[in-house]
Amino acid sequence: MATNSEATMTAARPKAKASLDSFAVELLNDILLSLHSPLELSSIIHASSVFYRVFKRSRVLILAQVIRNAFGEALPDALGAFYALRHEWPSSESNDEWDNTNRWMPGLTPQSEALRRFMELYSSRNLKFPHDFKDLACLSRIWLQTDYFVSDYSNRAILLMRGEEPARLPVWAYPSEPKLRDRVPISTVETARLQRAFLRFDMFCTCSRPLELASGTRVALWQFCGPDDEFIRGFHKLEVEELRCVYQYLTQLIMLLFGDIEDALCRDVEGADSLSAPPDTSSAFPMLEVIHPIGSDLFSDKGKSRFDLCIANVCSKGIQFVHHLLCGDEDTRRLEILRTCRPMPSLIWQTLATVDLKTLESLRGLITVANESIPTYNLGRLQVEGVVGRCWPLPKTRFSLRDRGYVFWDASRLTDMKWENHKYLYTYLRKTAEERLKNVEISRHRHHEIDKKYEGYKYQCSLEYDDYYDSRLRYLRHCERVNTMLILSAGGSL
Image (cartoon, rainbow, N blue to C red; front, top):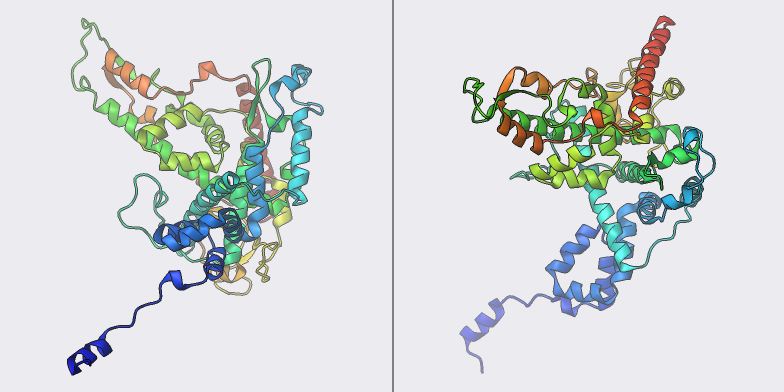
């Protein structure tokens, strides 16, 4: 018989907790199928061997359902971005008959036909969901990178709407912050709008990338499509405005990274060993004035005149490339940006960086919609602080509104938005490296070292498109000024 002390110990002993092994496999499988992101799935199967065994048994089925849950309403756009990367566009050999003398008015080519068929499949939502595990893993990576940008963009925009200063770079960018910032909560509908915009932007970049012809000439895929681009004309004009918001956000991040490169260049020059030494004409290493011909014309005053074209070319690589830049160290960023930062022809710049006055006129008079669903937009004359008659007119450039994500938010989030002074963030307000290093002299051997480190695009090696885009840029800027004066003189409100 048990003694009184043994009985007391038995009664005080805690009851054994139920193990996951005691749950039915079907129940554990349903738990995995209900997860809302591949990140949650990865965490749970790494934390529990029981869940890992269940996942391994039917990993394709589980991962496919989790991806559907993660993208939600944005799933068709995720499939579009996925298949655009995997699509086998016609090679340059198929364009041997293309007439180079008629490049600005090309006829139907294999590229334009392939792009048209792809856009038909995307628009009709006939792109099939993949069932190969490697393809599902690729879709998971697309979701993860998209979620990184959605989180950072929403945090920045909402902090600006509150009058607070956002962080300089995303929290996941290099170097990582010691303390993670809280993620600002947004609704499911707002998340879907943001996901859709970033996925479409990445698909746009893939469909407008340059092609190498058999003759060695580099052209853009969109040039094969004629004056009406197959990609953009498939979207509502307000959906294009979503792409413009994403484009502006990415250009600002890239400009910050380029500013870091300029700072590093100035530090390297100012820290040269012979900087403080007097010029020695008898030396085997005569002193040379910087910045010309050091490095790239991007660092000069002249280079900034076409800096928006250069930044557009970096953006045209897509959000995966920008994610690679942000996660890379200083050397990776410098090498990749100097390699790609050049004023090449870009549909990104022509479509998203310029001001579309026709779209601007069509947006006037629109009011904030109250129906918070995916197809609706919160645009136009937004009421400020709930005061009737006091409205936020749509500015000409809309830079400050785009920073605040005005096309993505539910109507309830915008009713108490406070007025902010417009900031024209495309203006390059920093002093160029040429201005900062004016009249600085260093020795020839040190000059050669720095020149090699920061070597990039130089205008004497310009592409054949440079003259065309110089004139095109001047024409567009002239039209902006003229049309703005006409609208203002007529009493219009921008």
